[in-house]
Image (cartoon, rainbow, N blue to C red; front, side, top):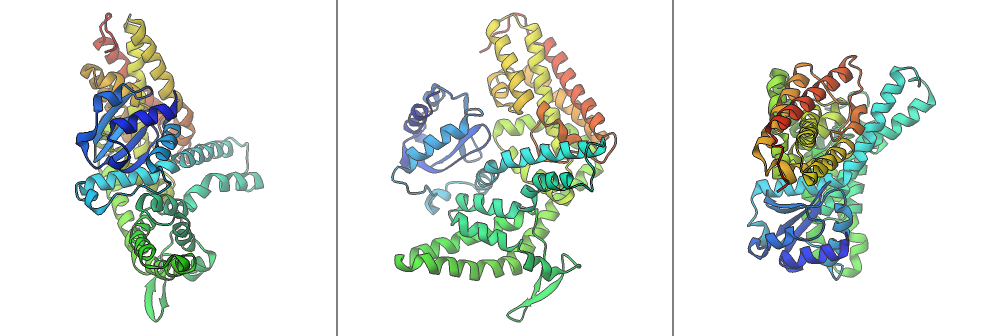
Length: 457
């Protein structure tokens, strides 16, 4: 693919740079917030080399590219910015976008850049736990300590990383924002809490302050940088150019660090813990039903581009508790899709369809990317979509019944199996059983639903 050429064609067919209010990308999609949907030539966008499909949902025009999307995004971003100025959504543009759309758009932009770091760290942690369990590495050794630091640092310093990506999304200084996040992890701040931990009190200018621990947290820093973006834009507009270098950082730190510690941080901690606790409580109350709903319905969320709303909960669970119940259900969905590709490959005689199914199998098994199969086959063939949903639901039910967890936030593929290694002795085995159930049911139903003369439409 010629990324520059494809980026130019996409930009032309969505109304040009002036119609781009905001832009980001996730693992497989270019996500654009446009000012006027009427300027989008959707049919012509789909004809562009490298474009698999398009979707206009959750306030974004989503262009499915595949795993090459970061390269295309770099070219697209240069074309949109033109003179080097950042692209921001004006308040007028925001008025045309619902609150839910804004939330989905923000979550996507904030978390997408961190997914490789989270996935890689998660796999390393799973392999380290496995190595310790089979006796290759001692928990008391320097080797274990160094590899543990390598695998867990992304979670400990999550506030710093999220501060940077949040700033890019909300229009604040990424570096000052990262510094605000780093202040929450400073050893001197942590020392204020002593051995008591969350709930320790101190004072700031004689004002009582309840201290909280912010390592591995998600919500507090995002709220803080969202609030800071308004202060930053105000300062950037009002302060003379000759004073900005010193005055903006000074006021930013002087205001935002105390404000975050005193007000925004505790609100974020309690709200984040509340949402996570509610989700986990529901899972504990009916893990089988949850497995059915998420295992069977995850592909629907992915097709609508709104699965990003659930990802922060999974990341928060892993960073806070060291494990998560939801990630395994997404594996069930992915392996049901793999099963469908197997069933189609075995039954269909059309060479083009067989090749598509084979490439889809390899893509999902190695990289967990289901969108090409989802948009290229399942959405176009409702019976095959149903086969995948049933396979994912049944496999998810088993995973829920066995209370299977992952020790990391990862995407469901063969390469991410180490995430199922945990302190629970049967966790890995039960995970494999659940995924085999999803795959086999998906394959059998897809084989039954596929006609021998089926073609790829």
